[in-house]
Length: 148
Image 1: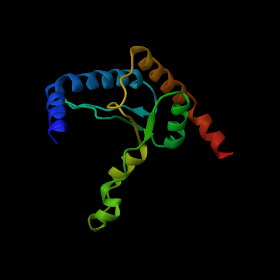
Image 2: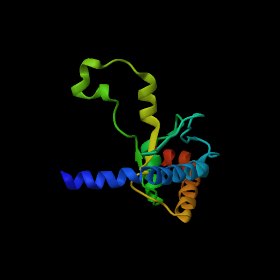
Image 3: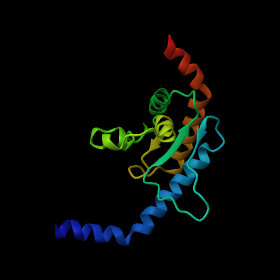
Image 4: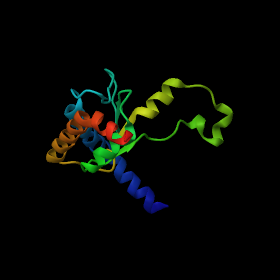
């Protein structure tokens, strides 16, 4: 409709400002976790720009992603376990199914912070880093508790 087009046009004129804010938040989140063991934050290749619809990180093998996300949520950090199943695993794309072990491995280890939904303050980013540090430090204990 004309109303939706007017809103879209106004937002497009602010695209650099909106994307710049997401990039700044994502870079600060990455900085908060970059030295923690077991987490690989997003990497932006030289000469490229990531607009960070979501901030995505990978957990190392051996870390129970669902348990990790549950612990982070308990710390007040809104993370998601994964994004979506690979398209070729969905019924509509069954004819395109093939083995994609890298894609499947990444999907199993991916955690997401919806950068498009939240605009954390500096204090909240510190809390984000502290929660990641706490959960990473205790993830082995959490996995042991789960097994009992």
